[in-house]
Image (cartoon, rainbow, N blue to C red):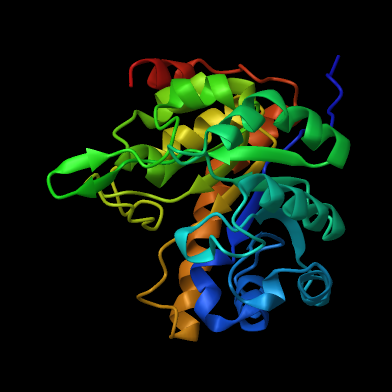
Length: 292
């Protein structure tokens, strides 16, 4: 007797608009669509076209793209966008996230002096997110180098501290590497708290390189294998450093396409297994993960 098959929850493979900010929003979405993506993470930047919902939503729809996630303006260069208060940024971001039809909003953890914001994340963020109808997730960050010293500008640099403080988490693979943490260990620690992934490789040189998949030292194959094995159904967003090709359209599209196809290939086998209701049909993957 054959077992019935069911549609398996699958991650959405997304492309971040952030690394392409210099092109302008319309040209950015053209490139992403040409590279074969169907979902994007929209980064709110200093460009007014990214700061309200109507234009991004229309431009995305015209290109067959869905805005699946929104990155609120928490970068140093966008700290004045939507005001200086992090909670107010989140309130405005939640409204825009819902308005563009996205489900997830990415925010940064508090800076060391932002005690009120830290308390809000621990005590109020989950309730606020539920009321707003969006998922709010806090991104893994890393210390910065000041001379020969590492200085933690953000709270909760260590994965276990972030897991205790934030109900939902964004795992940035390059950030985890810069902070010196084990990628597979961090993934296991976050468990069901993991809402979103920023995916890139890293050279292991202490820099936040956001390299192409396979161009660094991170075990991204095993990481993606683990996501597939455990039925992760959140976003996997490619966030790559594209400065070397951003002004060469053909090379840029080829780079994005190559990396999208790498992720799709890594997840394809687990999609078949999940659809056949055999989530642990082989012990090989578990064995490789446990010995890492």
